[in-house]
Image 1 (cartoon, rainbow, N blue to C red):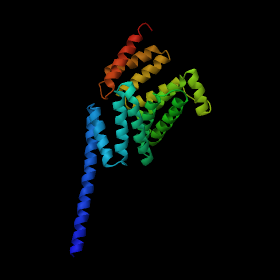
Image 2: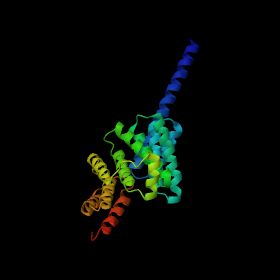
Image 3: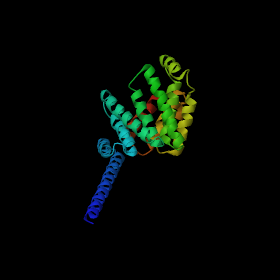
Image 4: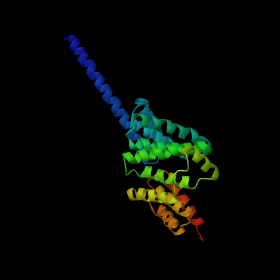
Length: 254
């Protein structure tokens, strides 16, 4: 009887410990989410880091940590960005391995790989661009209304459609020929993203850039003005508004 009572006490203690562990992890995720919503990016990063320390195989904690590394890295000097983006890539890859059916994990991996691609050149940049496209497409297969993944695909089409001569040669090697890409496809993907999330400033800014590259200046101006009209809802929005203001000034006389 005494042994049975001892076993039951140990079982209950273990159950309480597991419950406390889960609550702590969820509290840290909630803290990170709140910090990110208030644009406290360093605090969000620390919260997600602590969450992953509690459970290094927790899918949500991993992709949110990867996203936080991208957020913080974007605000760092260029020479420091590489470490943040590579950390983002590492955690996003683990999230995808653990949760291949999670759209957010694939989207964050596409975003992290895209940031790493900004820091390299030549064939390696093109190799990474291929993975960016593949991961964004996987995210959309899992969630057709993922505006972030649609944005990534739009950027992919625009960048590939406007590759330099050297990068076109690299693309032929990596893809076995130049992939089908166009500014028109980029516009279509940006418009789909905007239909899903019309208040997202970055969608409008990049659609405006695409129109400008296509010399459709009136349409570009309309998107830049939309950026200035919309309320701030993302940590990068103040920077995007400043860019839109400069781009509008650059279109004077066109």
